[in-house]
Length: 390
Image 1 (cartoon, rainbow, N blue to C red):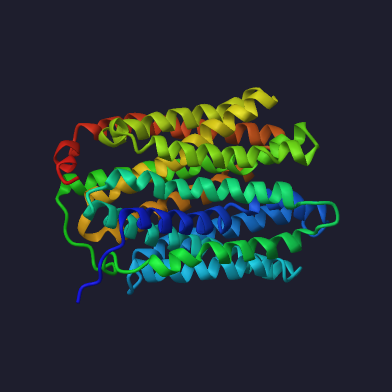
Image 2 (cartoon, rainbow, N blue to C red; image 1 turned 30 degrees about the vertical axis):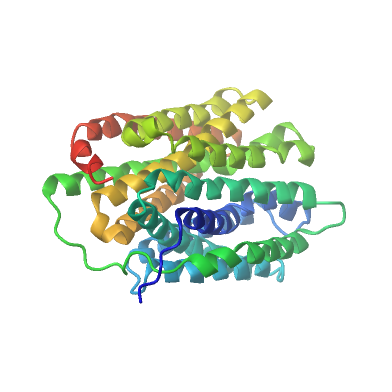
């Protein structure tokens, strides 16, 4: 007897909760935890850069592997959720820096698996149910996870409470949150197989999408990583500068709901190009004027676009390779991971201190702006034929 597929409501619920844990905790909880770890004296700023870099590298490895795993994407997604819970809690169970490096690398790897596996399952299930626009609720899970992790760190960081204890508590909260996804993530697309031959135009279009998505990773990572640190330079009260990250996450969650609107879903590449323009502005503002207003504007512009681009990019890639969606989504995620890994590396070539960060933010702005014409050119190629598949 064939198993009845879950309803679109349960698909959205399970996928959003899975992405909230995998990305909001596994990938992004380190950002609001960083000032607390530095406060406790267990971490220097140089060490923090190494922990961030190894997480980016793990994410890259996970994304590259996710499209080639020999089991269904849902199986890798379930395994990755358990892995995120374990490595998150383990961050609070040790003070050994080499183990922290290993744990942050594994957290990145599991996050890459989860994003590809959950996206492939949810987009396929919602398309089969005739409700593709509900993908907005799936990807809102990432921003929700970012916001909740930031709020957790903001309010749980009471006097006398160590960062180690907060890591343990965050792991416990993540364990509760993955129960529903573990029960519902079943079935979905088959394991990735050897890529079939594609028409030349279709293959070129997918390659261009992958390239633009990789530049998106480069352009977003520097402002997203350093916004809380920039806020702390101006305002030393953690109750104030700590609000930047929850604001970033809330903007990400709400923006994906807007991205489910019919006009945006009918003009995804135009919307993607517009988001790159807004994100470029968000990267530029604090490099020119470092004020509370510019930081808030930057958090809203970048937080309000990065998950929209993630959602639109995944939808477009799946549209161009419906028979090998996990492999296509894996390529997109790997390109993003490579771009975000290149961001901090590029920063090391810039002058030290605030001047180097300003140049890095301006480089992110320029890179994002250069992709806008490429995305607009794609609008007139295979879009009309691809839309008929929805």
